[in-house]
Image 1 (cartoon, chains in turn brown, green):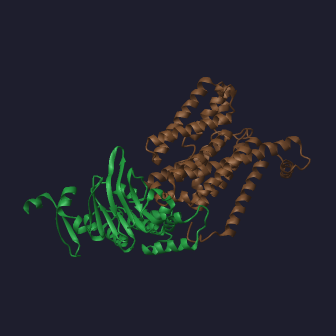
Image 2 (cartoon, rainbow over the protein chains, first blue to last red):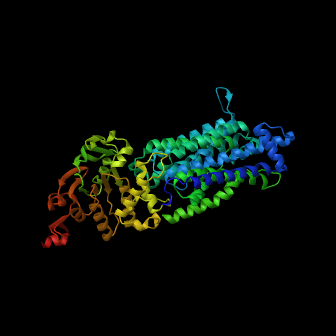
Length: 347
Length: 259
């Protein structure tokens, strides 16, 4: 946001929006065509036509299924998940004024794991009916969030305390998860849990998208309505309040929004670290720190990053699928180290 | 009368920090708030702009209880400059000053000519027009404080509240910041540490001690040797300085025995 931005520059905005859309489309196209089963591009297009517009191209049932029900739903889910997690990271970093804040660091993902594992292995249910893994993960992440909020409020609510509370909560829930897995799980179950803990788009089907898409887009809209207000947090809570921001209301609304976005994504695909952390930093590098640009940039870059990471996870090792969390962490860990290093120098 | 507080009390951690203070700022004048560390200066300023809510008593803006004024409306009247507020976010000087337009802009409103004019005028008033695009973290302490004041001015306030704006600045920058504040011509309420600077730059002074108002009035009446001895525990000799304002000289033990 430099002084050149004087009123909305609509042609530039439309150009950027179109370019983003094109980049997303290319990413999804790559995700749909690249994979273990070699499927020609034109066949892929026909399968998409069949699935999306109810056309009647001759495509074998297997290819149709792989393209439309497996790869396309998977790619779209990866995009939604990456975008929502990156967006959540940007919001948390702004509200807590801490470059390390993100859903994973704050323990929300750890809580989801415990919930999922409780359902997978212990068969926890409510009133006799078994819960789905997703529902368990959602309840777990809400529980973790409640613990973080309680700990952080008890510790005075300063932003570094929130991070510490998040670390403590992560440890607590990870310990619970490990206890359940090591004492109760069979070898096969343990392997399944392991896969879930590191993120897995393999189980994604269309109904998951009907939940994830509205959550991501409504969450994005709520965040965008607060873009200017988030800028005002740059110099702290008192500075924001003195600029007319209803600090408490904004915090409650935005924490709840990020919590729901994260919980829904994690409940569908498992825990995926580092996306919420590194994408906002990369996006800031590209578009600056004004949230009116940063938030859409996070959504788009997060989505593209996750779609590409998912492709990598499928092709990196032949005949095997790496958990998505492994791929994101391979990129994320070095960047995380760099941020830590810079944060230390800045003080 | 613009901004006034009546019988205001505020407690934190079971301790009374501001204890029944009644005070008012005269329009267009500079009111200095002085007192030892922990006397409640910062808390009082935060109560004045409703960053904290009074436990009892009332803060009034133009005769209206500020607790009933929406926060955004308040931010268009009152601007607040903290001591040494900083950020790790990469922001340019004009990014920071633009924040001052926050209370004037609706959630999805785009940047308009009035916003641009307010930002440019604020920059000019603090003498940083040519620093427009410089990054915040490359500025000196004095420049940062000027940018904060410009950000506050971009809010177009009628009252400006400053919490020790000269803290940690060298003497040249202290004088230039306070000279700037004096020339603004809007009502300023400012906490200060240095008694001589308070005497030089304030039209009126309020002396706080342990959350209570000890005295308020023109510097000559408030800054007496007795009051300073009683509240700060320091012996002083007060005489007229070269500027015509009073000059406070602190006496250390040895000098006191000789005199």
